[in-house]
Length: 613
Ligand code: F6R
Image 1 (cartoon, rainbow, N blue to C red):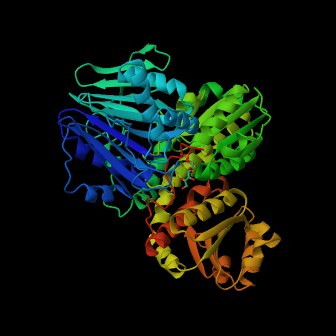
Image 2 (image 1 turned 180 degrees about the vertical axis):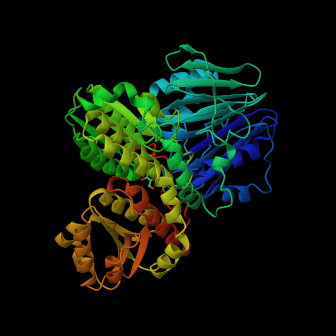
Image 3 (image 1 turned 90 degrees about the horizontal axis):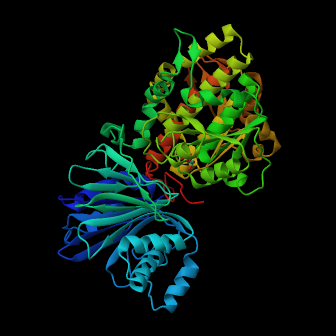
């Protein structure tokens, strides 16, 4: 949530900031702003809307300067407007700040500062923080770095901040707690950003700031780090593995479509080096030392949000069915506040694409405090969740830029398939011949996803028939019940059509009342997995004049006769079927959203990385 970017060096800062903000726009797009220091003046420009609106606004403005900060906002405190947009000035306008996170005690700090003569223009918590820093500077006579350090000791909440000072054309001060921040070290310049995407084309050498660390980034003195408690830290420089092509659209109209089409490769990447057909093995190096712990656990608790929670639900079916380990799947936001019973015999697995979701992090911290083993399934390497967990498995899907999660979901499910297969085999629940059959079937998934994608034109035609409806129902059973939920979520978040996912048999306990000729129902009716029962559910819908779009196994003639449209997927064993059945649902939501003129990659009110609770 919110993207921050900053630069200090010898190049023009403005184009670097703008390009960086465009890369970070997936993190929020309520407003955008920049501030550059030039000839002793801070020129600060900010605008409600997208980075493109800011660009338009700055067309005839002075945007010179070799040092600057930029921000793209997802509103928390105060509505999205020009005033609440970042950067924010301090009282004397000598300091400007950008901030990602929430200062929870901002109201009491603000009241105190108002008493001390401060005036506030915006409703944001961020403006309070920069006034506090300036106030401390003036009160104590300390330099900016020290004032920031003292101020951060007084605030409660989450932050990734960068501060620009009118008095110092060579220095930026940055700090972070519970919001991500990475510093790129160029040949003779520095880049700061919420993630590595704005940095990658300039340098591969980066330092990931840890929680409660403050950085002084100085063109002459280089990078100096301290903790809030005033301990000196040696920066640990890492090499980025990210490739520039991975964060560009590569000829596709939208990132979402590119990411849907990347799935044969991302699922393959996720299995690479882990699944070995020749040797007949599955190996997950990241959790090797924890396999016994998982096998002997009382239960596995999966915590996640949104699409990652849906992947967790598939995980429940996988672990219980293939490895006979009891599983509970929890919304991280509920788990953290409901005083759950957890102990050291529980294994808690967090699933998160970003690795930065605030509720998921808090759920993990709670589980850790109760002595549970905590594991992570994350996509973003070096993310908070990957660092705070005891161990974990990366999904290796590559950067996901589209706000609607697609390839991250299939990579998460692939990791869970690998884990369940490995654990079930180790435990002796899966015998040798079934293990080999499942192994071979899993390795065929990338090619089968490719087959589903070849059908995209037909899926687009079917989508066109329903682009104007107001409601959709998604039904699935067993392994494909979570896929029904995921299909409904994809549709609502990018096309703004109301959609609900249900276990097919639950329909007659209520939702069947909604069925009429205007209600399209997408039914996942692949062979095996309660097939006959799902066929009965389709008949129930048809008997009430509902429109049925069925996802079926190739060659299915029975459902074809009943449904209005069928979308075929290749045959696959049931536990791996969510990896195929979800693909047409992603495409349906994509095409419908495009046909309705929606902003597919940046749906309203959403942000990619939900770093606030
Ligand atoms: C939906 C979507 C969200 C995320 C959720 C969790 O398409 O992307 O529902 O799945 O915000 O995010 P992560 O996986 O980063 O923890």
